[in-house]
Image (cartoon, rainbow over all chains, first blue to last red; front, top):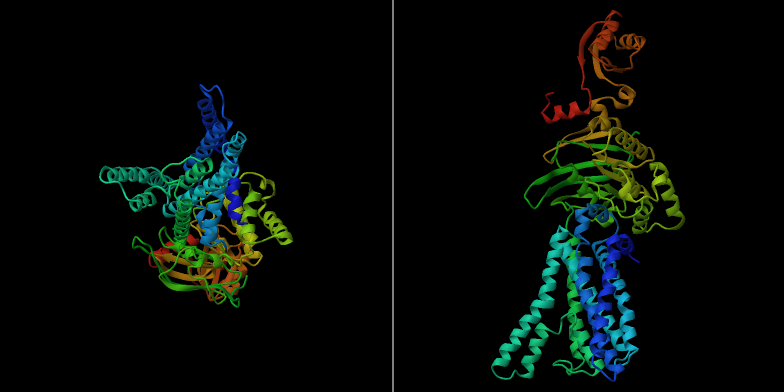
Length: 272
Length: 318
């Protein structure tokens, strides 16, 4: 295993503020799950456990995804720029580790941190399935997709970290990218759909093009498809075929590769 | 250590480096550093010393020229160069959130040092650097001097034949500086080749076998320490200034000065001796004159590397 991965992990585990983050990470799903349960139980004389379980599982899955989307770039955005800031980069380059090995170690170190946070919320998701309403494999598959989305975001943030000399610039760039990908593109997509629907009824081709361009690669889109299909709920694109989550994950993999390539390119830069 | 017949550990061939801002930091520099040699790199700020060391370690890619190590071209190949060259950069950066043991183990793992060899190399490095009591301490808690020792430990672990030390004594107090330079002397003693750049010239002149004086990216002069002052024979254990008497009977002059309690070396047509001040040197001259020999010339020589560097950089004028 890459020595840098263990070093990074060891350093992160010892950070005092790191212990505040799991607490926050655990509290958020707990609150949301409790709210979901209260909402689904309110005013009911006869409780359908399946309905409660599905609601709780959905909330836990998307709370987990949302937190990973926010925290993954934070975990990775300073990994390379910090080496430059702390002047440890020269000693790292003066070692047999090539740029690829350094990037892989940093990426896995950042991802292991998000993986750990993800694992913390897994009991919420699995406990929800005990109520019924959703098969156990669905939240587990969503968990896997969440981790893949986390790895993609880590890779993109790491790539930006390789581009910038300062951690602050890397953080800002990662935030801007996250905003563009997770908020701006779906908003533009929503406006485009609105414009299309204000005229004639959009054709299935137009609809798919808009969804592919603006929505289906979103870090939560494949999970939504999977969770909706797994629970029998139907929204616009969940009745489309299995190509929907595949399309999303392929785009993620391409972005992950781009982030990694950017990080390697940044590491190939000379040490001044 | 005699390097005259030793093989070159590293050979620089016409290295040139221009930074993206247009500054040409190194201009067609060539050099051979021999095995076991301590090479002192001196020059004013911005002379190109750090750039040259980074070029040798492969951290920078030159526009022209090559870095050859035992017939292997290491130009701009840091991963390959790292197997034979250890660099202590300036400013020094060490991971501060881990213990000294973890720091050394990390670099050992990076260099695929394992098992008995790791234990042996680690024990030797820790012993040489006196890091034993600090091994479980966080690097952050160490003083600047001990952090530099730790960085040296990283390089010692690797068994790299060539060590590049960029301002290793920068920011250290007098004691830490003396201890660190003693360690560097020890490195030379165990056969490592050391290229050391420093602004602390009095210490460097005690240490280096050869000096390269750089200015504006070029060599102003590369010469053995002996050219400037006979370090081994005269400077050892002596303080103060060096004086030269050219005379008709150098052997008689030497005997007279040694009789007066001076440490002397005989040179062609005269002697050189050390004296703390002008009064002491005058007494030395008087002892030589009393032998009856004819004195041709009597002058104070360079008092150290700092004078030499200034003289060379000023185009020969002190």
